[in-house]
Structures are given as C-alpha cells and as structure tokens.
Length: 164
Image 1 (tube, rainbow, N blue to C red):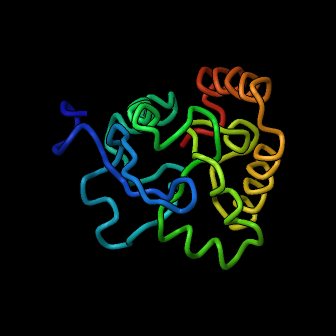
Image 2: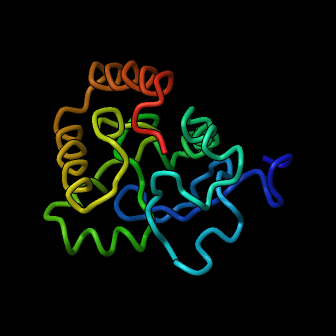
C-alpha cells in the first residue's frame, strides 16, 4: 500500500454494529485518500476509479478485510454475521427496505451468508436480497451454519467470486 500510494496503510470507517451502535471498522486501505471527497459515501463499483494500484488485488483476495479481526477481538464484530454498513446507508436503507433494521439484532461479521451467496451491492434490489439472506442467517444461526459459511468463504477468497 505504501509503495503504490501516499497515505496510511490502514483505513478506519464508521459502521453500524449490533443494536445500532456505531464503531470504527479497520481495513487495509484500497482507495485514494480523497476517494469520496466530491461524492460522499457511495458503493464500490466495477473497475472503480478510486482504487489505488494494489487495491484491486487486496479486494479480490479479501486481504483488505484482515484487520477486522481486531474488531472481533474488541467485541464489535463476529467472524460470521451480517456485514456492517455505514451509518448514512443504514439510514436510507431502513426507509427503503422492510425489516432492514432486524439485521442489527446480531453482531456484524467479517463474512456472512449474504457475502458467500450473493455479489456486491449495485442496486437496492441487491440489498433487498442480501437482507433476506441476513435474516435467514439470524433465524438459523448455529455452529454448523457458521462452519458452512466459513468453508464457502474460503472458496470465495480463492476464486475471487463477488470481489470488487
């Protein structure tokens, strides 16, 4: 990261956790420091022009997510659970998607059912589908489900499925 871009190695972003509590999520930085200066919060896109040279590789291999294990150790996240979202997106999505807020009943995860069975969000329809996966996970949460999600995560990491 340091060799290909000016700025910090780590990126800290506010996310919404269990019961709506905000926390700072850790990641390796994959975008320019000023990536959202003119746009504000926006979803990642295919061939995102905001990526630094090594950013695409870090995302495709999901290496950028490794620092989130610090969030797990701090008790803010689990290894498996619904992915945490940014506060500005949560506010909008709660208005547009019924039951969106129910996914905040559990700790967010580094990986989850929606992440291993669906692609990146591009539309509200994608988010609706992911919310269905998240709510199904919450209903079926058990060690076996978590193990199956972790195995599928390994496949996703090694094949690059869904990565941006």
